[in-house]
Amino acid sequence: MPYRRLPNTDAARIRAMDQALIKGKELPPFKLAYTAENYVKLQALLPSFIHNYQLQRQAYNKQVESNKEYQESLKKAKTYINHFLRVMIMAVQRKDLRDDTPKFFGFVSGHSSLPTLSSEKDVIYWGKKIIEGEAARMREGRTPVTNPTMAVVKVHFENFLDAHHFQKTLQKRTGECSDKISELREQADELIIDIWNEVENTFADLPDEEKRTEAEEYGLVYVFRKSELEKIENN
Image 1 (cartoon, rainbow, N blue to C red):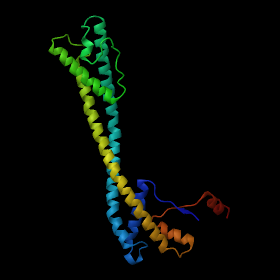
Image 2 (cartoon, rainbow, N blue to C red; image 1 turned 180 degrees about the horizontal axis):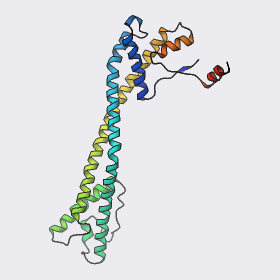
Image 3 (cartoon, rainbow, N blue to C red; image 1 turned 90 degrees about the horizontal axis):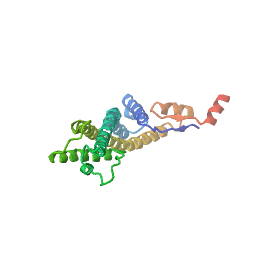
Image 4 (cartoon, helix red, strand yellow; image 1 turned 135 degrees about the vertical axis):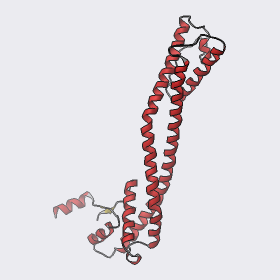
């Protein structure tokens, strides 16, 4: 006997519910192979499921689409922060800037190795640190770091912060949509199982092949095992 395969994707769930709903619209309640109660539930659940499924896909696609621009802004911010610090350290080594200059940017005395900037958190930390440090130096009338200037670094850093905030907003939206569709998924699975059980019970007295044919019109999916397919082919 072939086994019944329940939908395991959202698209398959929509197909299953849609097919059952179509039969509900075609037939009067007394001829329908599942209960009127489940037909009412289906009418309410399917539109909501489709709507939230589309929202989840749109949110995810938007997040993926914007990620390219975000990664580019992150890369530029890293490059300019790294370059600014490198130029500053070299200027100190050449005595173009005073020996205490690195302290303004959070460097411990005697240590001037560049930060790794391996995470977004690192980029945000060091971006803010060098902006604050250079502002403090300017208040003391110190010589500004150039090539790149802080103005240029700040533009790229703020572009990154904007992109970072936007990406986090998209991630939150995607998460909210995923949570909602996950909740509806449970309801859909319960309803589909209930409807499919009712349909199979309605046609239980029919011969197997006829029973499957009738049930498939309501969206049920049957799968033959490999051994069963081989047996059919041999016959």
